[in-house]
Length: 412
Image (tube, rainbow, N blue to C red; front, side, top):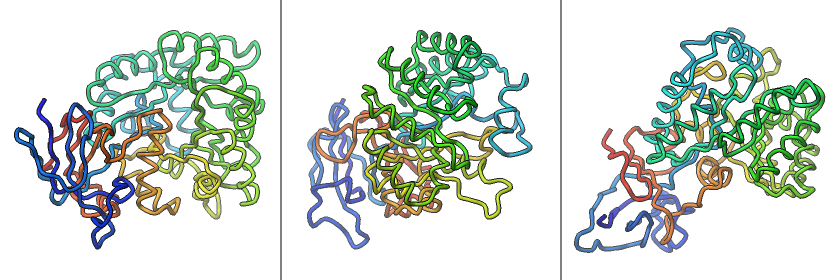
């Protein structure tokens, strides 16, 4: 392939560490980039070489491609098919466990592939998707998402999490444990579950899921404390158990109840989480929709993003559900999620984008991307002058590169 020369782009300073005096009046950096064999080979004020494919990026902001750290591709686009009249988490779960939700594998594949390709067009380079692994759904979601992973591998990386149902413990959990074993044997990438829904406390199911994952050398990503009940603190159990020597990466998603605690207690827990090396994923879209109904005053229902970050916890942000009973809206757009982190979590725009790019990449174990020589050429360029403007407008005019290959040409 000929080298690609990206001329005259703008980027945020955090992605151009050697910018020097090239920062403009808006606080952004003008830069050229040269791409060869899927990687950036030069950055700065450059001249194209003979034979380079030149792409003029004047008027575009170029950024590392984002990562979706928490999705449910198997449920995508069901909002018109399955209604959730109560609008809360329990109502969504009841709808998804009803006979009407027992879709066959081809049906799940069609919707999940459509969602994954939409994410790729919007700039995502990877997505971690939970797949229902329950006695109601069997292995249908797992089989479907593993097939989608294969189909879309040329445009986006997909990680499949076996989202284990409940109960898990004791004689009542035997069938569920066997189903999780089948999912692991089928080739899932991550072990997941919802310890706070076990009904007998969070420590037992958390410990079991960690043991199963460790036996198979798999990462763990748990739906953690997806509740406004401040006495439900599975995050504390998770941090304690991981700190005892769990060898694989561990992620806690949601962690809503942490946001309901006094700040002193939040700080204590955040320090435990940081010491254990557990990453946290905030999910503003779905949590803002499902949580807080009937509460006066109505809470924001987000985890304690600022306190966690101050303690040194890596906090990523994801969109979670896409137009389904858990969230009837959503555009599979990183700038939408970043915008909600600005509004609901009070992050600055550059930190909000880092939550959907840098930090999200850490969750899924993706190679870090800056705009420096040697980095992967997984990039997205949007028609915007600044990062704040890109988050505000979410411009449809985008150019997307995966490993240096242009997937989306721009001009929309």
